[in-house]
Length: 255
Ligand SMILES: Cc1cc2nc3c(=O)[nH]c(=O)nc-3n(C[C@H](O)[C@H](O)[C@H](O)COP(=O)(O)OP(=O)(O)OC[C@H]3O[C@@H](n4cnc5c(N)ncnc54)[C@H](O)[C@@H]3O)c2cc1C
Ligand code: FES
Image 1 (cartoon, rainbow, N blue to C red):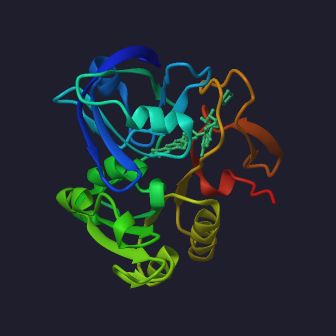
Image 2: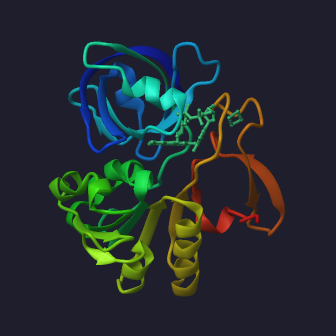
């Protein structure tokens, strides 16, 4: 299956923090087709453009998809006002997700803020072989710690203000670890620091990028990103179709 549009019933909705919401929907064939690191485009009534939200968790036995999102503007505020029993219009599964490879490798998952949810399903596949390093502003912004622990993952938290776990950057924790492969999602400065460590150590690393999107399916050039071929030639690709997950060596950082 490629992608499809489906009206999905919201089965569960919870508020995780002051502005972060956790929504599980009945998604039938979309749940069967979804892969870790892919995203869905969510329709918001009255808005022309759908809103891209990563798939946080896939339950193929129950046919459900889980999304964790933060209120950033009008669209996400409208989505946050929906409740169990309401319907969510999804275009999914979209994009190229994480390529997990050999899950007996020692994997480290590095997430910052709302970049943490897209890592949950991929980390599940690595179980006790995964260490999750998650960075947040402060203790009241910490999310999904118990969910990763349920996967069997080792979890280390960093907070900017030191109110929980390590005081400082999540990449301080990464610098102290041994690992075979890195998967990361979060703000650009964090991703750049992760890529630097991967480059220095010669470690495979996949990063999930966030870019403003329109169509979400590679048809509009709304989400251009500069990429590098193996030959070194640079070109523009689409975050929505070629990504959002990329091998770190393919991404050309601009600015
Ligand atoms: C692949 C991908 C996965 C994402 N996954 C998540 C997730 O799991 N959880 C989460 O909380 N957020 C996620 N985001 C960010 C989320 O899409 C934006 O916060 C959301 O679109 C903002 O919409 P709004 O109407 O509330 O804000 P507004 O600022 O009112 O939006 C105006 C327009 O800008 C677009 N836009 C604004 N900010 C972003 C952004 N950061 N990225 C892309 N488009 C944006 C909106 O889609 C809309 O078209 C993801 C973004 C991408 C590209
Ligand atoms: S959002 Fe249209 S090409 Fe990516």
